[in-house]
Length: 327
Image 1 (tube, one colour):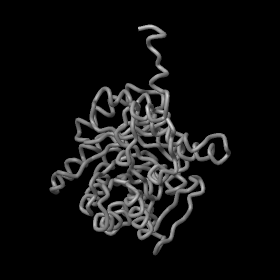
Image 2 (tube, rainbow, N blue to C red; image 1 turned 120 degrees about the vertical axis):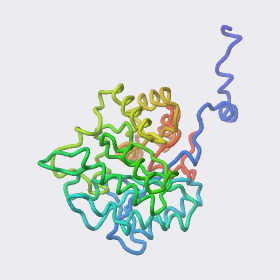
Image 3 (cartoon, rainbow, N blue to C red; image 1 turned 90 degrees about the vertical axis):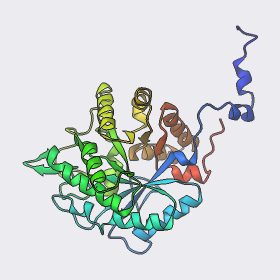
Image 4 (cartoon, one colour; image 1 turned 180 degrees about the vertical axis):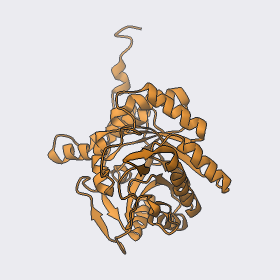
């Protein structure tokens, strides 16, 4: 039909009409909140992260307390990042059964109903800040798989629901799946950082967890921002190796990747709205160039692109209903 019979504005005539016709909805269970737990902090101490306004490094007690508070507000899932007191060449603190992440997992599983996801990587735990074993300034892929598997197993033994390898070593999903299964953890899910790009948007995170590499960069294992077909291959391989959920990281600059991955594979898909995306929006809001509505709009764009789950630092704002996008 042509105008005037078809009037598209009828579909938008009021807030109530727009709401019932809304195609994309953001639900509390879609959100995963990142928690940084610093071993040196005690009791309920927390440290503000200067590069990420409103975000903190927590002690174990503080992290559990914050998780409980957010669960009461409607949060379903957290992802844990540890900051150990001890770092060495092999990141041994990462797979210590009494490590900061392992102890936090136990507390959360004892005291909450949250789904606990754990970041499986070595960069925060190694003295050199890289995501694997180093020899002659080269990251050794196959030698690193054993260490990543040990980390994942230690998280599963502590009670993690989902382990999330973020290192981008070839074959790590297969290695972790075999290790988990051999030890009886058949039901521990793997959420793979399957298409993780070498992005400038990670800078605030590296400051937050002190994980900047001491030399070189991560471009030999993280993906080139110029490539999409490579991302499809990466995701396909991780699924074949046993990934239950796949992730695209970052989110906003890679909405096309999220959409293509979801269209191609139709499996549970996560996206990480990373530290740089958070800090960029917060800077705009604090300067008065943007309003809080931009937060909700950014998350809706990620969901609309195809993400089932969104790791985001904005979860507390959304859960507290400080942000309401009057569509």
